[in-house]
Length: 365
Image 1 (cartoon, rainbow, N blue to C red):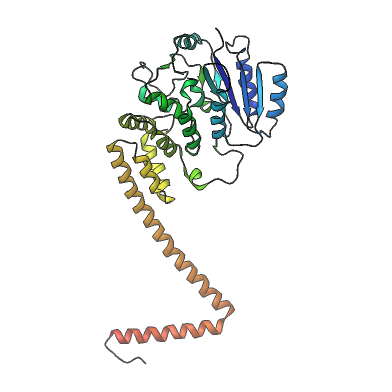
Image 2: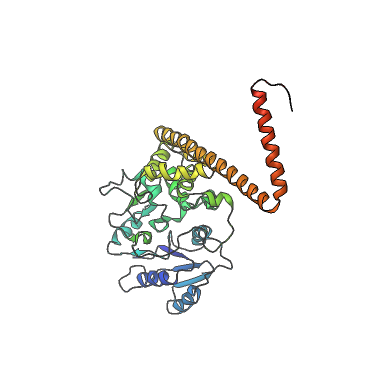
């Protein structure tokens, strides 16, 4: 097959994993071992950079670009797609550094490239076990949120798409703009029947750090407050079809690969956290892309947790008030015994006079 795919790998401090990834891509049986491959190293500090330079010396079709600074994983994803536009192939495939590959059925990809298919989805773990190409449409935003899942025709990446990808970095789903643009423009999308990439997150012994802000200490509050659910709901607003938005969000909320117990985990755990941290306004953003029934469920949970947490906060403040008074009383008794006795006598006298007045005695003394 003529090389018509540019492969770009993003990496940061994943020495153990990037070695395995490159071994897979450059194996004798790999159909992409002679493709042009570029690695965007996000200024790694764990020896990854040095390893990549050494590895590239043995593989002339591998180019390593080390970012001057760590720009964050999500920005590096955007840079990967932008970088691909300077290369000659018609398609781009951006890969992460910690996944597993099975090229046994690569012929499926070759067939779709020969047909000129706009998007080739090389994963299907987020789809029903039995699916047709027509039925998968509302599942695509979730499935293609996994970066290596999509091989895209570069003609999709226009100015508007690239701008919105960079603008949506805070959502953590900038790569989904490509899928949503393809859906908006009715582009051809094909999902392989046999997975090429297996998501490394699901590996039992995977000890990789998957935080979206790795390598940074200070994070903007909006970024720090953005959960998976909130980010996904934000990026879905790029989708023109309102009904499709709601379908896609419903699929994500019920997906076992996101929430172990489906939407009940979102309703019972994530909403509680939003309310506990004063983030009810974020739930309004999520409500923009869910069905009416789910909106009602969210509203009911907000009220339930506001009441629950409000009661607990009230109990806490009453307890704190008593605790502070007790500490002050003990400190006065220990360090200012005469003042303590005076205040106690004054309090007793005021208490007697108050009780007398309640009995009808109008005198102050």
